[in-house]
Amino acid sequence: MNVNLHPKEGILFSAYLLFFVIHGVQTGVGIVGLPRIVFLEAKHDAWISVLVAGVLTSIVLWFIITMLKQYDSADLYGIHVDVFGKWVGNSLSIIYMLYMVGSFFIIFMNYIEIVQVWIFPNLATWQLALVLIFLTVYAVFGGIRIIVGVAFLSVVGTMWILVVAFVPLRYADFSHLFPIMNIGFGELLKGAKSTTLSMMGFELIMFVYPYVREKKKSMKYVQIANMYTTFLSAFVTLISIVFFAGDSLKATIWPVLSMFKIVRLPNLERFEFIAVSFWMLIILPNMCLYLWAASKGFSRVLKRKQKTGVWVFAILAFGATFFIQARYQMNMVTDLVAKSGFYAVICYPVFLSIIVLVKKWWTKRRNSHAKAS
Image (cartoon, rainbow, N blue to C red):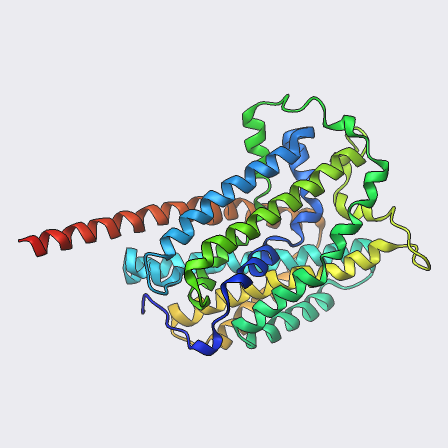
């Protein structure tokens, strides 16, 4: 396997679009339940935990981009082979592919659950799953530039939802935020860890990076995107804390959607129906990028056509929908992917980056000694 990819000039995209890619893939179904998940760990300081998670994510991104800069134009699959060799490297790549397929699966399954609870309670899971998967496959077949375009439209087309989020502030009780920082640092870190499902997605930079035209600007735009996602998530969490009375936030599964219920527009009594419908546009970049990255690995590791990989993973994900018959099963799968995501997204990239940096340093040192002798 070639370590460095050399994509054609025609499929490269500008570095500033990384802002839309990273923010688009970080913001998905996780954010609608984020305030409750973090509140269970960090109580009324949950919004601080989200900020801490953003800082940690920023540090991980620094490691990832620094690692990628050690190569001309490599993705994670190529780096695995360069660092660990063909067999071990490809084995690690297959494990990472499975994680990405799992992420792809829980994204659309959690969205389907939201649609069934809020709009169509009698809708069969497989019907909406089929629609979402075909939409994703169609976009992935268009290539990376089409996927980046989907991410751009997703971010721009849903920014108005942020304005609507200010409406619950009319009923806010800011006394719910006090006393600030009256929990231990351990609880804050637990709260930060619980944001994994909502913050993950930024790791896909390890697959998108070779297709960026001005690679030197990558660090700036991914950090800006992560900063924007962090403040958005912290803002939504803070609003949820001041809006819900007492511990009622603990009992509200999707607090963001529940807050939308108070929004009233002329001739539209159930605004949350609009929000849920638009959320499909928000999750689409997530699904596209995870399926594209996994199928790219299918092509590079198994030496098969990428389109074949797209269909294989899409069919596997669709088949898995028939095994989820109850909410507790969906919760188990989501928790499993979230826990594995913590290691795949936070721990492993930092570990791999350190190995790459040490190896590059050792190689340069050895070469300089060889020239001197």
